[in-house]
Length: 235
Image 1 (cartoon, helix red, strand yellow):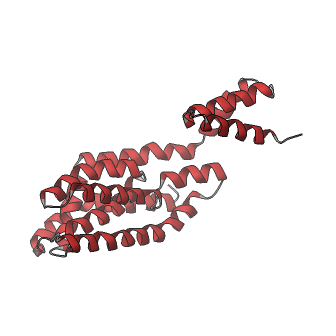
Image 2 (cartoon, rainbow, N blue to C red):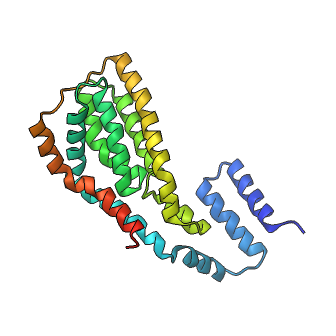
């Protein structure tokens, strides 16, 4: 007898091939599978509940909430200002600032779309005002936001860990270094494109300006330490 999963997969492929939206194709193929093998509709609700009734998934909305709160209170603007003062007149300074802040913010919310939305409203207008191309600024923020899928507390890692019963703290630990490497790799084309297009940086901040910006950003700088420290501390 043919493996039932084969027919499930074939039904899905046929529906997708006919142009049916993927979400509907998944639902219809699953419904056909339940009907053909007379599994009963009650198994559907039991499986749904069994897959979402896991306390680890509660972390997802709270990580996103943390990112939204920090954005609402202006932490993203303060971080951009601090990093901008430190990078100074480096070619493509604001583009490099965007990547650094994207990597840092990824360590707060764990959500690429949330990071892109939060930072895009701040960085894209600022970059355009400094003469950066709108398409370049948008592409850079979108690319930088995607780093959140690797940097802990990555929501993707949480879901993967829950589904495969893998240690989520171990996944987080494994994602720190690759996430930083991806951020550094993204800074290379950002710098080269900025140099080719003549996107200049600004000035270095004075000690007083940097110190004031640091004090203004202290809660945002502490957020990843609090989040990851709580995870590895067993809280």
